[in-house]
Length: 335
Image (cartoon, rainbow, N blue to C red; front, side, top):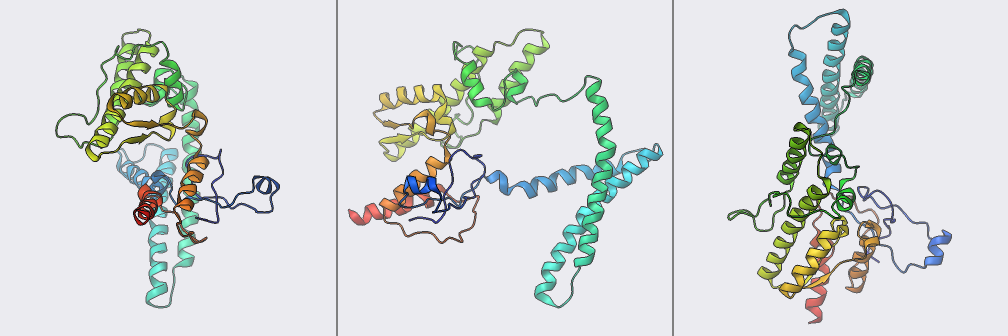
């Protein structure tokens, strides 16, 4: 069996750290699994929390130098809390690094100072939030509250998450009504790279122009044109890769495979190109547990050795190392 752990279907897709299964559990006993599959992959965003926090902290530092420095006693206390917030975070980080180094170089520690710095940071954070919350509450009561981000589905009047909402809104719309750009499809662009940030910005600006003119946003046409652009780029690049590398079967998986236009366009273009298309049922497109179990089944059939139970999370684990390499080696040996 590939692992002693299993990712249960139905959990949040970002939580890839597998949960242990009790073999004595009645549901497990009824299912009678012959093996248990798990994944060491995780969403790259999870590994970026520390970097994001550091960037956010760095964006606060310039506020310490705003002029005039002090406008009132309350402003002075707020500035002091901000200074202690930044200083406490930096001090705690520095003493933490020193503690690690001292464990290897010579006896001694900064543990006491490290924890004092942490408490200063926590206290400053509480004071700072206490000053900011009333101001935010007044802003909301004044009617200038939260506005959706320009490129978010809420900005166009759609609920979050945007994928299913856009698919539903596109029904009955004209996919050619809005000439949205096809990112990274010009000559000289990376042939198999994807980036839809420019497309999202174009869609946001399109919706914003309608609001500025006081016009009703034609959601059906906009949503249909948006998903047409995404599906077009996906299929164009996927089939170009199939042609370049002589691949005769295209598998469309993941949440994007649940989009009706992606499925329809994939079927249409694969049939025209003579490429076999395989798409999972809609119920399995967003079931990460089923995906992991399917890869585990391939590994077992390929005779791969089981993983150690103490395997660690690797957010940047390449997919081919998890599935393609062991299967390819086994197939090559069999041939």
